[in-house]
Amino acid sequence: MKLRTLLLTSVICILFLTTVACGNGATNNKATEKPATTDASKETEVPATTGLKGDFEIQYFVGGYGDAWWLEVIEGFQKANPDLKITQSAGPKINEQMQPRWIQNDPPDVVYVDGAGSNERQMIVDDQLMDLTSYLETAVNADGEKITDILISQPSVFDGDKNYNLPLVFGSWGLFYDKALFKQNDWAIPTNWDEFIAVSEKIKAAGTPALIHTGVYPYYINGGLLDSAMVAANGGDTSILTKQVNLEEGSFSSEAVKKALAQFMQLVDKGLIDTGSVQLNHTESQSQWLQHKAAFIPNGLWLENEMKNDIPEGFDFGFIPSVAQAAGENNIVIPYTATIAIAKDAKNPEAAKAFLEFAFTKQNALRWAEITGAIMNVKADLSSSSASGVVKDAMNFFNADTTVVAPVTVLNADVEKVKQDSIIALSIGKITPDEWMKRLEDAAAKARK
Image 1 (cartoon, helix red, strand yellow):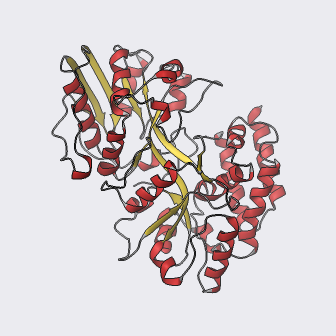
Image 2: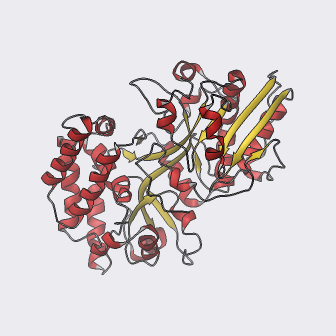
Image 3: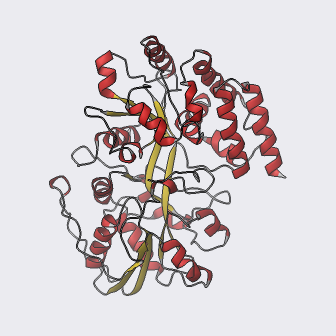
């Protein structure tokens, strides 16, 4: 996987996960042979023919997740609609290749917004995507379930109350640790802030830094630690992040922000953060963590797959979405997603909506996990699937009633840069929490102008 330097400066937080090219060619006009189905996820019956006709085109980026899931789902949709002529426009450079058609108001019907060259917010600004707000109020999937009821992360809101997409891929920031190491040393897995500080001090006393992070790309420690701390300090209310995205005055200096920064300063003042982290990029910090040069690392769910060639024997990935909450309070998930949408100028909007309803089922979510090793944005039981242990652990958090999932939020690019620079300065004691808040409030004020 390539460096994810565009994260949080573009709408698609998962962009950096899928920039590794998989597959060849820009366009497939017919679904090819699909992968074998595992015993854990035998195919369900293809729904009865819906009677859809005409042409239907879907555009999807082929990156780190490959195209096997798409081919399988599209083949099933074709069987359900034999009179529908389906065209697949797909490939690692498909966004660039399809751009002239979008400009000429000749788009495909459905688009998976991900990968190099995609920008969901710009597509909305350019009025290229269909307003799905009313549709999603009642839309049900092929199994008769209301789609929004089974989503882990709800659609992003634009212009106050409008939905233009459905999050298809779901991932989460959080803290990762080695279960085997913790078991060997009898270290308790923290479930709240007091437990996290207690075990971190115990780890430090044993001669190991408690936490290492990717200092060259500070959005890792923001996403994996600080953002969830702000939500936890706000009583689990995720609106604190939305207010920051909206650049509301005072949103970067509220009491919840002060509390979250004070928690972060405990790590700094107690010497629980590896001070060498500020010089490390993502693979360097991850490699050191895999070598047990630190116990925790803030990261995203791509971590295991990204480091699969360097994982030591016996290493057992563990995942915690948040630790800043008080005892008995909910876990906080800070997500990233990649979305699917319908073109405003879709030639076959009926088929486009039917495809979304066909794709967003728990069965297809299970197949996504098995085929890609990642999580589709649908609450599904992965316990009997071939997905990795850490993915199953993460899904257990996402399915739990004791978990709050924040909306996907993207700060103004200039404000985001200040936030990244400021968390690093705070982590090494160059600035105080008050100075962090002033920097962010000043940046937000400048952006509002």
